[in-house]
Image 1: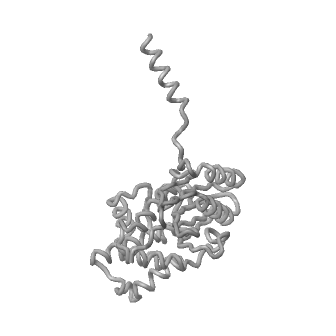
Image 2: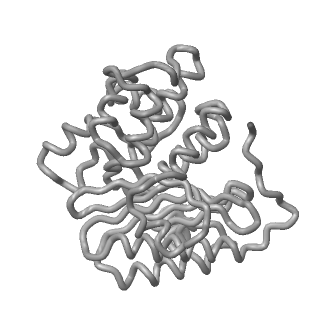
Image 3: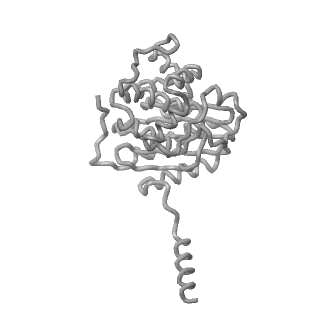
Length: 280
């Protein structure tokens, strides 16, 4: 009986402990601000953001899967560039008679779905992208269908197929940036295209006029996503993933969350950390 009482006491003690924080201690105010912001919204929103200098992270529903929609196009481009780095392909190749550079630009800058499926076929299809992510230890991202299949299938915004958690997407973007998945030259090429993104100007960019942003949007009926990089005044880059499904005014919600993230990370004292420069 005494042993049982000890066990029960230990269980009660463990149960009384607070859950591990989803965000870094230095960003607790930002986490509370984001929670308050989302409490007044009708959409289901997942957020993750990471300071590439300090590693500090903030997240809301960071482990919850959300549909990626067209944000998957970043992974498609990254795999093609990894194959370029390996000498298997070239940016001077053509796909169905079109220059690869043109097809990739259409896919990332204008979110052209036909261009995305052309790139999908070039790299080996959704399974090839999924296997590449898995083999490189990127977990929490699922790639199951082509864009055409995704658009023709019955819509379910809670389908685990073709989904990512906010934290997994941030991890993918971080590893692209740090040149772990593709070489610096390929990374720079990809970020340059993301900086030209013409879709979703009322999302991550909406309340950040003049702020450098490299991003990729995703959209389905009832869904708005935006993922990418925001550069702070001191040169630090913050990786951001924001997914919003259901509810109303999703682009505005993304814009307000991105602004809060920008202000929150900007206010964090980071000396003596320096801003990481892109390797050429």
